[in-house]
Image (cartoon, rainbow, N blue to C red; front, side, top):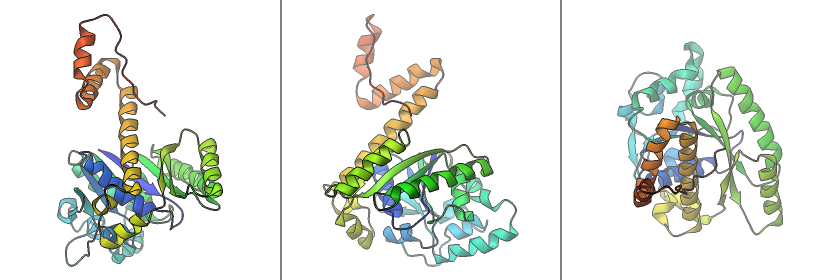
Length: 298
């Protein structure tokens, strides 16, 4: 299970939109995905058409009043949601009376290690509160969502500095990646800014860019991922590309970190999924090397 926290220091950067539709694209590729709404504004919950009644939600899980399995609901798009409501703001106050309040999400997710392939955490628009600290303590990767607008470069630099400081404070070895959103390729400013971001943050920026699209707003208003509203629109294409890039990146890192004796098993598994197992059989019968492309590790 890989835990991915989508973060930023401000709202309006497309973070929740990215979390919801990224989760849907991963699910469409056969991944078992859980999205956790850690924002007291509950935008991810609303974007998936879920309105809390008397059922247990994230607040009860964090306060130890409910189990994770009792609070998870199914979401449109073939994945699962741990919903939130405005009551989640109460956790900030309750945390002052708790021991290690920044670790409760980690403890809750420990019970579902084998149930999900990816857990996507939609964080509040600040990284210094106890809810965001829970996400950073629990995550394997912090994905900084950056809009391609004015002051984005300066904001990204500052946000990365804060993430580095929190990583030391929490003693949590998460990796950091960046995703550009709200990109309008028609404007020279956006194109030049995207280029500057790739030059400044080479190795951290994902290649996929999420373009502006009215379909994303329409999908959120209808309470479904954009892939269900219009699977052929450019927004759906963008998130499908993001899911493909992410899975290729994880596969490459897994291969890079594997011991030599385990790499052949990973290679065989990758070839089976890609339908290239016959190439492996032919390679085994010859002395020629097998040229299989793996995306470069970061």
